[in-house]
Length: 335
Image 1 (cartoon, rainbow, N blue to C red):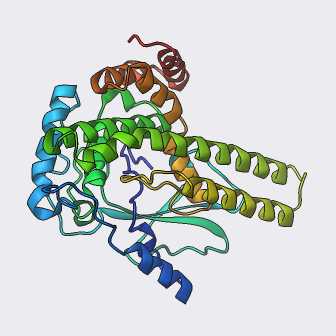
Image 2: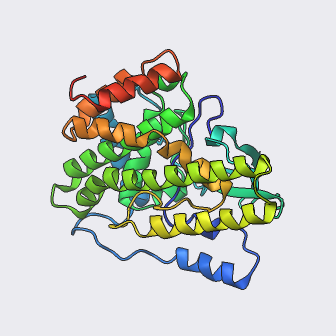
């Protein structure tokens, strides 16, 4: 959620579930599995994660490219903190309520222990933030210890949120555009730093298309569940039937998104939590991403032309104008 136009970073890849307070031995076992280190697949000389020794060097490389691309300058990631997260948030909503973005979810502060909410009453998403797009975000310990791919995507993602074009638009425009900008900028930094044959660069090159496949699944599931809840509130189906159909929809969502291959390296293939709060959160990132991905394809997958086109489209007076601009640019290769 944005607080006074503050963005949250996309979901962490492997550690989110391990931070949730588990109430059973099975949950603790699953959390432990998510803490296992990933299989190494790096080119010689490329670190598994930035760590304290390499993080500022990578931040400098990202900032240098951002200046060439016309990003607004920010002070984010220039200072480090030993804190694992910059804050802990508890997003929640009703069992049959599905807001269209994280801006419309209910929100209270959490702690590193979790959320003080009744999960029998609400669908809850506990989110430890590793970065925010407020232009002042420190480099958290959790981000410094993420994969290099994740690190190289998050830094430009959050910096892109300082674009003046996003200031008056809903979060769905900001998150989708910052997600694509993060992928493309991170991939170019990887190419410059590690080479075109490095595994990091090859991994990041695939991320825009993988996220497009995720977006199609999430958006379709969101529409399906939104209609289900409309039918329930209109009295067309019973609560027990609605709950059964809800569970089936989330089961099918999980099956589809976990089948995406190759596996993404900088984001979750599925919502981190398979409930209404987790889906509404992810929908904020995926709603307009397919349109923006089409703009990327229409510009032959070129970095600067794509970012220039996005900024042109988002230089709009309102949401309807921005959406119209995106649709026009997605059909044309010109700016």
